[in-house]
Each structure stands twice: as structure tokens, then as C-alpha cells.
Image (cartoon, rainbow, N blue to C red):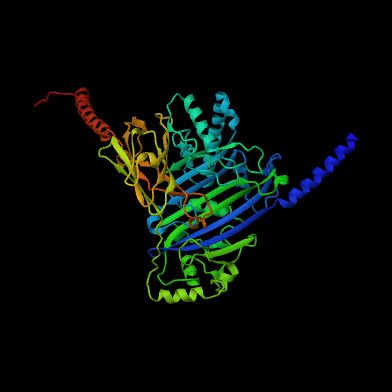
Length: 581
């Protein structure tokens, strides 16, 4: 009887394995979205989605040889780390929210940015030793991921050190994949780790504030652990063709066929805004019975903002934007879907979506084939498209004070809507800049501080060990402006800690504003629960000594030594003789 049960179990497992393999296959989709902006500009975004279904319960699943579409090199890069989702972006230029409105997808800040979510176990919160051991493992995995991506994308992410340039916010971001995330658990974890470092924590905690932010458990997960975020930013990273080519090599058709062949590097890197991003996440695609099978999704995005001809519309606009015309475009045979979407009025709703063949045939129209004809009649009356693309929330950040030591940061947040908006302001400060929390001021003419400021999460910095982090949860009143300001002290560094150009200043990364509670029309394109705005980078002058003094001393000393050495050598070597005359 026992052998019979083993045979039945073996047969069922074999059929189950065959069923899983039949459903586990790679897929590839590509999309092109075009959205007109104000001031005679247009945003173009290429999106390439590669999916691979895999069984995480099996051993060394990425060692299988049946990689059809999904790149094996990227799978080998992700597998060693326990990362559930990460996003790396390389951006040149800043997205102008006030003039351009909302982007097609999330706009990245200037420079290089890396965010990663790692699986953690909340059961270790009761044991400090296990918590510190797990934190050490996460740090090693974070450095391994950053160094691997640095070589993979030809970037400069190897600058990431343990805590110097790494931050772990608790309430600002949430994972986009189907993973259980608890902001309260992340906050408790960071609080316990800070106690082990014998540092103080300044916080005001409202129990009911984030009760809804704890997401429900995923039915596909079995007691999924909590997630921890690692974030780092490199504000002086530049974007060039060395970063574009590795992304195109991930695609099955490279840049020879498909929508990727339309990318023009000359227009891409001369645009007003250029962003290259790589996004990876894991999620459960099946029912509970197949919960042990998960899929990995890789999204490669190339987005830029460029100028266009004033009267170009429809196919003429597409032919003007890209290096190849659609009549010469060859579709990628490995792509399941290839769509070209066009936003006719810049509202964020892509009403026109066609296949490559339909665009090649000149059918970039709506179902009634009347839209473009009406728009052409309107274009005769005006030379430029003037869209009302003003975003309902504005953010402006700048430095205050004078001198090089005592400075400050002033932030203006404006709500142009009729209704309160919940926002989270995230400020990351390097350890060279010491903020004063007692000088934090939140003011508004529409209400007092108690009604606006709901939560403060501050992690102080440690010299040459950890940077400072400040999270502010605020409620912006209707049609009002909120001002956030605080003072900071710029520290005097050691001689070898100064950059190569200390008198130019220190580059400070951008601040993030996470907006929640906007109307539904702002999420029709991005399909996200929150909108993230980034400010521009700041250049802070740091107190530095006169580095020319050592060279002046060396020059003066060399001249004096040369003078005395010449006299001494002349007196010792020279032989004096009496003349016979």
C-alpha cells in the first residue's frame, strides 16, 4: 500500500510538472506612446516588457537552458540576491511639472537612481542579534546588486557604500508588485536598528494615520515576509550611448527590428529630458493552486521630450520624430503585441491605439476616422498647441542663508485643487550637512501646524557612517500654499574627503514628494496609487581651506632651496687660483 501511494504521488508530480512547464513560457510586448506637451514639445516613450514564468521552489531554476526570449545574463544577475523588485534609472534633465503636466510614466530625477525592495522576516524583531545579522546580509546583497548593475549598464553605481549614500524610508514608497508591505513593520525595524547604534530617534507617531497603508495579504502568498527599501542617488551621473546599448541588448530583436529600431540616439541625447530605466519585479500570476509558480517581469523604458514641427500631426508627426519611417519598419517576430498609442489632446488618455501594420498603412485615426480631420482644421487657426497641462500640485525647493557653513532649505508646496491632498515629503541629506530639527517650521495661511503636519520621521546622521533622512507627512489644504523650512550646518571635512573641485560645491540629491488622494483621471495612464514628484538637484558650497597654499609653500621652498644649494655647491666645488698677472 505504501509503494502504491508513492507511485501515485510520483505520477501526479510528473503530470503537475508537465502542466507547469506548459504554462511557463517567455513573452515579449512592446509599446510606443506619444503625448503632445505645451510649448511645441512632445514626449515619446518606448516600453518593452519581457516576462518569464519560473518556479521559485525548484533548485537553480535559472540554470535551465530553455531561455527563449528572456535574457539569461539578466536572470543570472537577479538570482543571487533576495531582491523582489528594483528600479534603476539614468536621467538627463528635469521634468517640468508646471509647464508639461503629468508624464506618461513616473518621471525620474536628474542623475542615476537605484531603488530595491528586499524580503525580510518580521519575526526577527524580537531578537536584536538576528535582526542585526539579517541587516548585514541585506547590506551585502544591496552592494552586490549595485555593483552588478554598475557593470551591466556601464553606470557609476559602484559609488554606493554601506550607509553613506543609502537610505531606507519607511512611509514614502510602496512596492508595485504583489508583495505584502507593512509601513509600521518597517518603522519598527528601523527604530530597533537605531537603538543598537545608540542614537536618538525624533518622531511623532499617529496610530491611525497609516492604518490603511498596510496592504492586505496576497492570496498567492503564504505568510509573505515584509519588505525593506534601499534607495540611493548619484546626482552627477551622465547619460550617454554606453548606457543605451546594454538596454537594447536585452531585447530579443535588439535594435534591428521592432519599435526599438525607431530610437534615434541623436535626438534622444539632445532632447530636453532623457530617461533610461530598467524595472524588475516578481509577482504571482496564477491561482492559489499554482501559487508556487511566480513570474518575473522586466520593463525597459526609454523616454524623452523633444521639439516637433508646429503643424505636424498623425503620421507626419511620427515620421518627423523617428529616424526610420513606419513604411520601412519591420515588426519583431518574437513580439506578441506591438502597439503605437497617441494622446491627441495631451490629457493623458491614449484614445488612439494602433498596430504597426495599421500605422504603416496610414490608419492612425480613431474608429470614426474623423478625429484627425477635425484636428487639422483646428491647426490652421493656430500655429502651436497650447495645452492646459498645469499639474494640481507644485513643489519648489531652494537654499537659504549666506556663507558656507550656516545654510537652510526652503520648500514651497502649492495645492491648486479644491480639496485637501495628503503628501509625503522626503528629504535625504548627506552626512556632511547636519540639519537642526528644532528649526523645522511648517507654515500656511490656510491652517495651523497641527492640522497640516501629521507625522515626522527623522533619522540623524553619523559622521562618516550614515546620512540623515527626514520624512514629513502633511495635508495640503484646499487652494493654499504650505512652506517647509529648516536650518542646517555644513561640516568642515578632512583634507582627503574633499572632492576634486571643492570650490565648485557639493551636489545634493533631489527631494521627493509623494502625492496621494488625487482624482482618478491622473491615474488613468500610470495606474498607480501615488504620484512621485522630484525636485532639482542643489549645489551647496562647503567650507574649504585655501588649497593653493600648499602649492605656494612648495614653490617658495623650492626656490629658496635652489638658491642656497646653488651658492653652497659653487663655494664647495669651485676652485680659486691666484692669477700670475
